[in-house]
Length: 515
Image 1 (cartoon, helix red, strand yellow):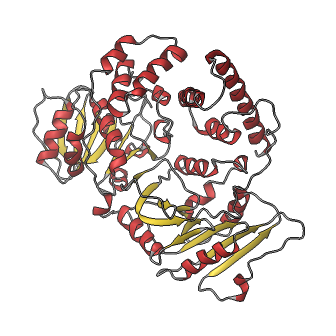
Image 2 (cartoon, rainbow, N blue to C red):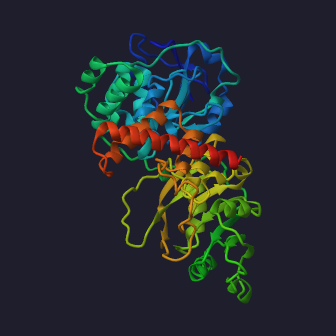
Image 3 (cartoon, rainbow, N blue to C red):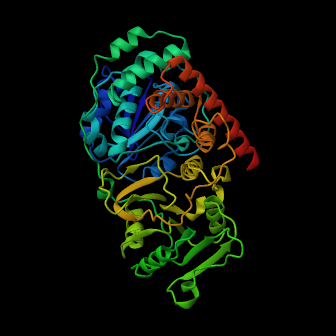
């Protein structure tokens, strides 16, 4: 491990921690320049940077434990401030811009307070973004650009043994924010950000806006391919997995799923099936569960009520293996799927996977192993130890968003979700049965229809900060304008305001009724 100590502007010292050997450097060079030189000279080391104020608080053992893979970049902002302000929420509403600071949390927001990256990885990606004298900006830009390309980026409080004294330092500026948006997003977002400042900040940032137009977007790509490296983190004790499947009206499709599971080179321990049918006098139609023998234990529960959240929550109570596979009742899988899942977990050292899930004739468009803001409740693997900390929120019942909410709950307890494009599930989207059957909602008869849907508003209220909420609202109003009949902008705005308030009203009712 190499330790680089700085004062925020220049480097104070660089040393090899293991041998306590001082490394020579030019004290007149910038922090980033010294980082580059050290990485070239020592191409196979973990490089950790820390501000002089926090050096004594470093927890070296913890640091080595969470840099378990060559493709990890992590930092921690002691104050919670970053060079890119939370107003980035006007532009991006992913989980990565709204950091939970008390756990390891996926984010491209980086800090020079304390952080680290392997020199081999740093050397590979350093030329992918424009050089910058501001070290916080450069590191954040590096993380933002390379996160979709296989760089696993985190905020991690375990860099330090204890909470450090917080000295408020303003790192962000409007100028940096506009520049960042121009370099990392489509150009239209610079204009949108400008409008958001006018509408919601009551400011006219003409110079930052014009200045940003002179910068080019970072386009150079280097795929790190995390599967090339072996993790040092022992994530698997037992290769045991349970499969949970909620089902309604898909007897034949579920049978095919069970047959695919039967052919697995590594069999699941339990297959937990929650069957639902609200019809009066209904009973289970899954006779093959008893008529045939299966090479795994089947736990079958029949409910005379519907609701996918209710079904999955019931299924979770029966999970007793180390891992849980969230499946749908109309998927098809290859015989080596479970075996490949465990191979991937071992290589990456991760604990939650989101698998590639495509319809039969759908073409794959994304090919990178990477952190994702998606959680697929029919295509994901979760370590069971996390499941007693999360639940499918029934506020989302009969709507959309329960899987995204479940993913956010996982992240907030320190569980990252990694997209695996090399393991495929085929989703048939069966035209019969299923949980997306039309359900009469309480607001359908209202003269003013809620916009967005109340379940989506529940997600916004639970997981968005103020700037993300306003940014989403602004974008929604713009996009929907073309799709509706009211072309008078003022009348349209007034109508959308009413629809937004209606959505807020019903979302509050949903959350209150399901508290």
